[in-house]
Length: 151
Image (cartoon, rainbow, N blue to C red; front, side, top):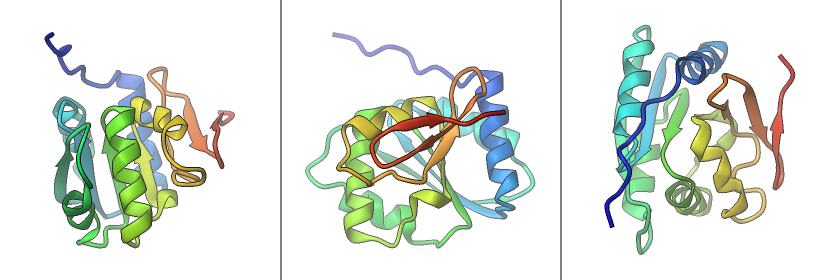
């Protein structure tokens, strides 16, 4: 069975993610991406020229541990993290990040698909993370729920 082609983010989604990073006044970021999310990460990098991308870390949708990727993701101590990719891979990666690193979901901004990881990750793993849906609406992850914020 073939995989669907990776889809770049919508213009509204991309603009909102960039705005969320700017609102944090982040100067340095690390981008994390599932293997099929390279177009999303590339679009973000092109839309956010005012800061420094310290690293781009890729992870698989399925892995035995994600520990190597988690350590690379947090090694640079950025002002913020930007994540893109499927919910399954991000749920596994975020579980490893919470267990074995100093990663903070409240300093993490995600694209639309990453929010769905809340249903697969242990309770509280993604609490505080924010991001954008395809229409440019801002979402925030609570204990085990996705909350749309008012514009």
